[in-house]
Length: 226
Image (cartoon, rainbow, N blue to C red; front, side, top):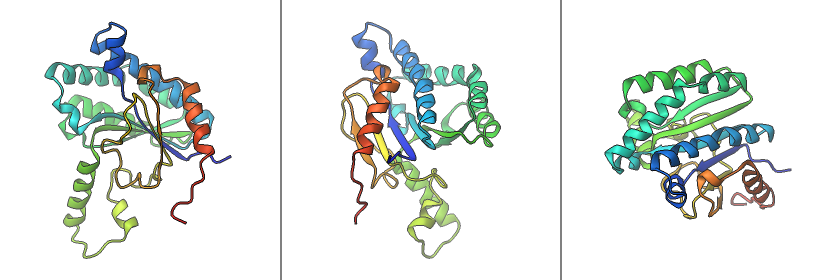
């Protein structure tokens, strides 16, 4: 069976789910967080090596100050909860893509601690996109290249300067919420990814729906330009 080694997910629809169910935006985001753990567990059961979630984009700063504050509080409460212990118990390695420098310092330190304390885990690597934007990632990579005064670069050498260095490109990208675009997720890495879109809002996305996406992927004929 053609199981993807790396699945990336754009978990869209928390706010619409909240509105649909007469809940606050904060409740919508909290409900969306609750979906992460069972999806990680199902991916690990399927022997998927890498799973990426785009949790906060560079464009999300444009939301209301109140909502951004709610999201920062949610990230802080997740890190301060049993999240780290669950990662350790389940042999999950945590990795971050994006630019953490804009986040509160205590949150940065807590995230870095989680990354450091799970770096030897090897059942599955979970990548979280925080303050991540594809164009921003490429610009930061170019600046790293310039700082090292390279004269020429191969594609693989350039990829080593991206946030995802050492991680295989996603085979499958799933977007919930009905939108059919990538919105800047991994523009360099996604060129041969299969794209799966569902109208389900993220809080409605279950492990069984994840299975449907993986089954859909296994039926695809991936020629990769051949």
